[in-house]
Image 1: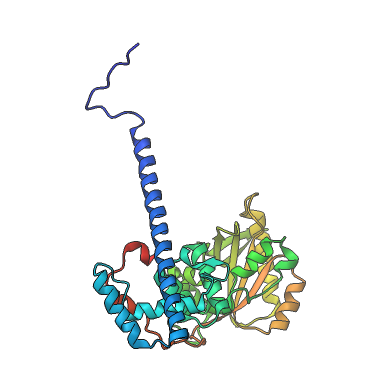
Image 2: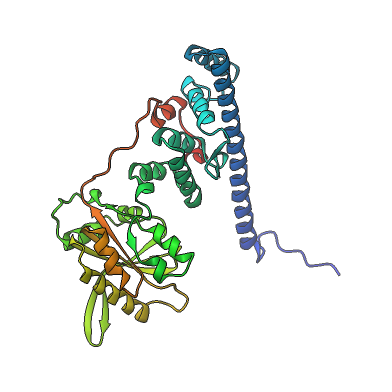
Length: 350
């Protein structure tokens, strides 16, 4: 039996779904192609760098030979912008510092070339490069985000808060939660003096919520400020309430413009109990507290948290930058290299 032909001007009922599926397949195919092309490019750059390194070691090549090689390669491949003297020196540096083509456990070829250059230029140790490479891959960081994380020394601050998570949370959730918190937190973008009051800091953090979320790290979603709780007819107000999408739990943040005191932990413990009872869903993990204070004695904080039932972290905040500027090497900067190579393709900027 022949099916009745559909009129030419009538759209099939499943056309929209089919088109959406095709679009997603096209995007996925383009992404796979870009990843393959990037991996091939990084592999080529590493091989060129290895060859230059070997010839410099065995034949005493100097910078003038690299300059000549750059000219000859650009003459042979005028449509390719990656063969400047600067980039060839980066290739050599890449091969020298990544002999296995990896940053720790992370294959370098999974990163765009300018991410690799950023790791080489901005950082001085393989341990630091491996940590930032892993974070960039896990969270899909753009180069701008990677540079900001390096500038703020996130590796040095990650997991440094005083917590009782090991005793109050099951593994491996406790380890992930501990690594999520930093110490100190940098609030220099608020433009406040060192003696700012709690409400001033809270107001400024909400005004600069995007920067605040970047400083907190991946996974924090802002719920609200001065979140009202009612317990036995009395009102209580949480300074800042967040939900963490990776930890699958609420995070209560309390600000103290003073040195940490044990009673601060008791107050936060009460808030966490109330949130667990009134807000937390059955499938949410236990609510976590983060107490941000002007300063703390680490031993006092450890003693205070040892007698607390709920998972709490204590960290300091800095309203004025106290960390040193990142390493400056003798290599050309990423910006100088980008300027020399011209406009980057979109996938190389991710």
